[in-house]
Amino acid sequence: MRIVCFVAALIAALVFSIPVWASLPYYNSDIGYTIWLPKGWSEVSECDLKSVEQAGTPFPVRGMMPDWQAGYCSPAEGGVHSLLVEVQPGRKMHAADISNFNRFIVESISRSGQAQWQLPDTPRLTLKDATYIQEKKTLRLESEVVHRGETMLSLTYIVYTRKGMLTFVGYVDPGDAQARKSIDKAVLSLYLDDNIRY
Image (tube, rainbow, N blue to C red; front, side, top):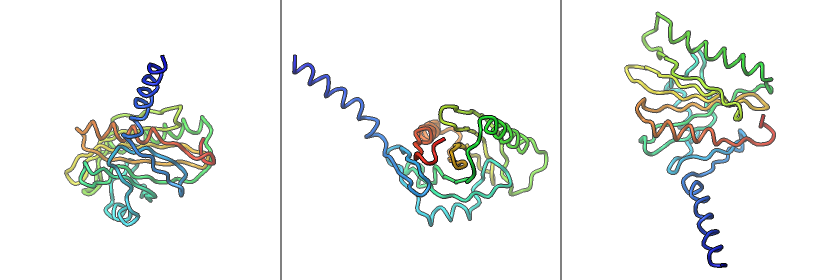
């Protein structure tokens, strides 16, 4: 009987430890969160973040210049930055404020995509999906971005915190379902420190 219990405990330990082996936690003490990244992903250096800003990476809300505070990349994508993080300081928003802000963001992106005039170098956006994940206090936006003849899928997550918002932005090829799933899983695994958790 003891052998059966031992084998059952060993199998349970293996089953529950597989997700841990498949991803690694990264703690960002400056911002205050832990994120579980897929195996093989790594943090982006501060120098690389600056080069992304200077390159003018398209951002889903027109007119906003992002200030990336952190980033993560996947070697499967040739070192291309897969996930970037921006901090929007502020206050804790009430549920009605979050709802209104979500509506404003979705309408702004929809309007910008419907604009008939486009400057030659301006990214064109088409909102594909917008979902608010209540238990995570996260608005997930999926947009198609056409910039300089290239098409990318932009995955944006606005995470509401006690001290404002965190914005996570990932860019993947439109047909790369695995990369999209990996970014979704990583951002939705986010664990905020007590002092900023909503």
